Image (cartoon, rainbow, N blue to C red; front, side):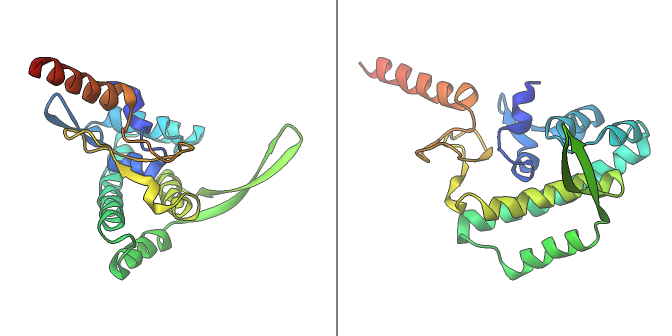
Length: 194
């Protein structure tokens, strides 16, 4: 499995939606196996060193995957409403609030090269992962315009991404995965017609 698929969305909540994708005309669910779900969390920088050790317990990892699937449904709803309405419904806002309210977080001070930084961390592995995903939703609403959240233009792709290009004209989840494939198909189609 190409690990670049884990982070194509540009932010962890969109990457979570992208954990279900199409490859060779088959639906793939990254959260279907413990190993790929664990790798996805690592690639999205959702785990602390202590979390990696804690997730060696199969029960904890299985519980976290169940929670990720639930939050993925919420994130999919957020994307759908942005796409269709340009804003979130009151129901979705309340679902986000409920998800955030149950998180147990604390402030932590980290020192790095004589600099101190205060960060928020989940008190458990699940709290930490879910906090970071919810925080990524909030940051997406703060930083780029919602119009910069896009679905890949390739008709066989269902991946989303945040367009961070300067011109704001990005069309593909990845040039390597979909852009080149689409351009090659168009080229061969034109050749065939000639």
